[in-house]
Image 1 (cartoon, helix red, strand yellow):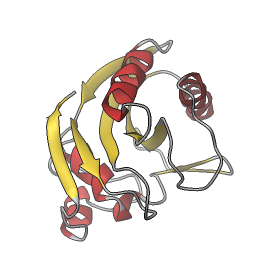
Image 2 (spheres, one colour):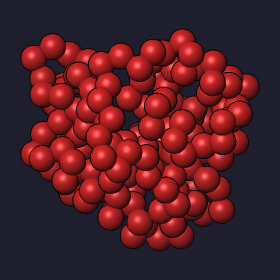
Image 3 (cartoon, one colour):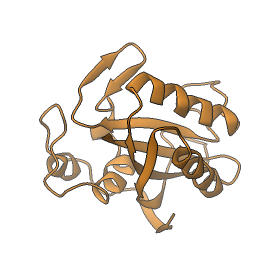
Length: 161
C-alpha cells in the first residue's frame, strides 16, 4: 500500500456536496482506503468571473497503479457531471493526484508531484493538515518551504468535511 494525496475542487452544483460525494466514491475504490480528509477551503477561481471554489485534500492508502488510479478519478469526475470545455474552467469536480508515495512520475497523462503544487495555496494548506510537518516531496522539496513561499491569501478555511 502506498499513501497517496488527492486534491479535490469544485465550483458548480453545490461544491461542498460534490466534494462529500467524491470522498464517498474515493472510499469505495478497489484496493483503496480513505485514510484522512482535510478541512474544506474556499478560494477564488484562477480565472475572473467564475464562482469561488471549494477545495480539500484526501489521503488514500492504495495498491492501485498510478494510471489505474488516474482512470478511476476521471471516472468519478465524469459520474459527477464533469465537462472539460475550457482549461481551468468551472467544474462540478476536479480530482488531482498530488503525491503518490515517494514516487516521481513523469508520464504524458500524469506528473507527480503535481506540476503546479507549489503555486496553489488551496492545495498546500489542506495538504499540510494531513502530512508530517517535515514532509519532503519525492523531488526533494520541503513542504514547509513551499508553504512559506505561497501565502494563505484568498483562502477561507471552512468546517471539516
